[in-house]
Image (cartoon, rainbow, N blue to C red; front, side, top):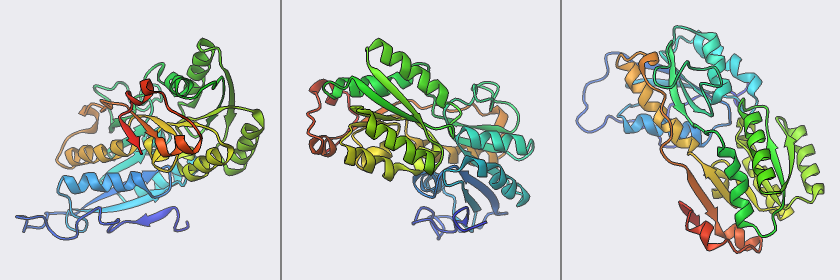
Length: 327
């Protein structure tokens, strides 16, 4: 396996301390081994998880060793990466996204599993229920509730004048994608808007989808959540800029990179909070007894620099609802 898929993080951009915290002079009785599998490339997710461990006082090489693997937006690689970490006999396995959690659950019934960034762990068959997940698995859900996806169409419809024609990009790399598409279609009918739907789970498919969107005459773009879309953030933002398309995304990573708008829970924060589950499990808690955590707030981010570049004046009614505005 190439370096893109297999990396051992001893120090990650300063995310883990390499010296004991103040007052800690005793080394741990044992060093725990944590496995981490992300469906995307290295970036905000693994950094957030490492930051969560640091905040809890863990020191790489003193308390824990972390084996990291990355699917680089190719979901078919996740089962193999999970199996590789199981062979290393990790003490806890942290996995990203619904598809990663499914792969881990199928692979082991004994190693504790903590998932992060799952859109709907109950519907995805990962846990029996959120309060008592049961078995050897628990974690942090993004909890896109029923009807949530409609907001991805309603907000740009309100923010962009005459945005009566939308293109939505979805990916089969997200098990919940079909649900998002159905909810967008319902919202489009309510608003009497046209909605074109395009699927892409590989680079050739994405190139074809973007070409079709460019030819379609759509006035706004919606990118729905998926590991694949996350790995193609810069390409998607650049396409929208070049095509002059106002775009709505599912996480503020895209708005920070130049996308117009994003709305949803923080995916990075779900990985940071996953560290707390690892901490509890290493201290003796059973995963199946730990309730699945859900986000408490959803954030609307608007990039006004991008709006000005597109020649848009975002209505005050939308700006007042924004949690963060990028000037």
